[in-house]
Image (cartoon, rainbow, N blue to C red):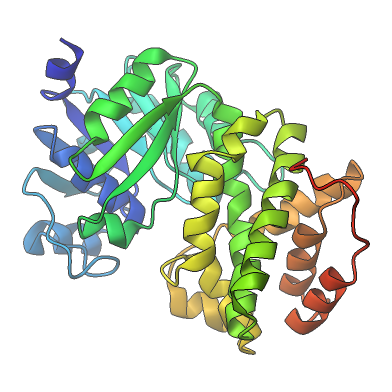
Length: 341
């Protein structure tokens, strides 16, 4: 019965970057109508005319059930059953305020933003709950390199919510023969896992930029996960979330692939490029840059030992070179406790 309901539903996707576009394409395999909100009219015309997204996924054919729109009123016209929120963290509160009056409160709201609000440290589910009159909120997060999923390569994600119907909706809307959707209840842990791994991915890019090999990457990933657990549990997440698909799984994907924007930031820095030049070439958001600063402030205030996060932040603000940061990390005192925490 629930399956039939979602397979007859109208879905809205707020945000048409690479990941939002891929989520829309997944939903269109299962649902009769998917409306994608894009911020500029030129992109709307391009998507509707070419059935592709020339800016982000020019080589991917979009499902005919997808329709791009520029204003929220048209996106919500006649009602939608579920909303997938796929905007950068820095844009979430402002856009949520704009869209709020079009929600009825009956929608399922799933966000796919791997970041937090910079000044408040609020998770995106909290930001959405504060601005939108929609109580049933959840998060989508996992090892999800958008271009691989768009080309039909197998992948999986986690949908977490305190509402069972939200998890079930996410599974029915997004599951395909090549995309598995697991459920969970630890919203805090899943959100922070997806956010924190971006910083580790920047550091991983350093290693390849300097040609330091796979042993170094394995060391970085292992110690990075330890720091993620330390931070994530301090924020209220469960340790198990950082050791599963949304944590370890996402870390491995983003720390080893040039498709990862945050990895490419680290790679460029190690190759001597300026941060401005790297971001101009990316043409899209790398959430780990802001996360590094925000989390470093939090960890310093609480005296949490997170040396990788500290060095990434200091490199990004120009206080250290990549080589200096790696030298300092290799000079850190060795703990006798090798547990994950």
